[in-house]
Image (cartoon, rainbow, N blue to C red; front, top):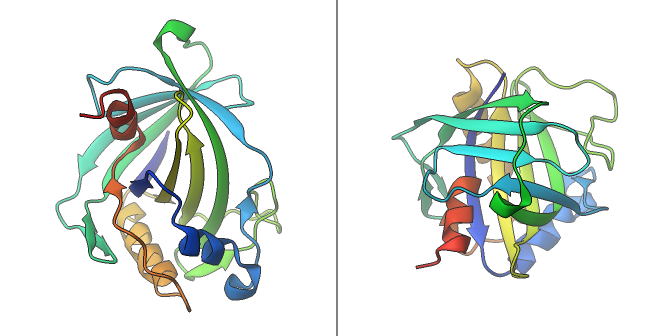
Amino acid sequence: MQISAEIRVFWSSKPEAFVTWFKDESIHLCAAGGGEKARKDLYLLDPSQLEMGIKRRGGTEFLEVKGLVERQTDPLSIDGLAINPEIWTKWQAKHLTFGPDVSFSTNKLRWMRKFDAIELQEVRLAPNEKPIDGVLPAEGCNVELTQITDPYGKVWWSLGFESFGSLVRVESNLKATVETFMNRTGRPELPHGAPMSYPNWIAHVVFPN
């Protein structure tokens, strides 16, 4: 079981200046991981509930099952947008499955930056999103910029902060990383987007009204 604290924002159009800044190696002093090849993720389509996500990640043989544990009442602010952090748990299951008639397909191209939440330093990543030195911090946070194409061909963008580590620290890992990253030099202001988890976003795409 993995534990995380997360915030995520979606946009229906590309936040151009922020995307350029996020990927700029000269600003961040290291390259973002990923960004080379899109992957196809399949989600179990169940818009009636928003507290569980079941996904088959592209290129893997198992399902990822994520469950919402708690929604925090103390929001974080990103350029004036208040977002309540959420605590999630994740499991991997090799023998669960779901059919194409209840699936929601996405194509994702993702860039990632990873932080050691104790030292508040960025971890250098290879294109496969793994640490170059092979050392994963015990307490940390992923910062994910993702271009997502939904089943209807519409392109979305998402910025997500997903911390990891011990239960007693994941929320503080998230807060510290958000503050550190969003205060970096030259960051363009983000347009207001929609703060949602992936289950919420899927429900929004399927039932936009």
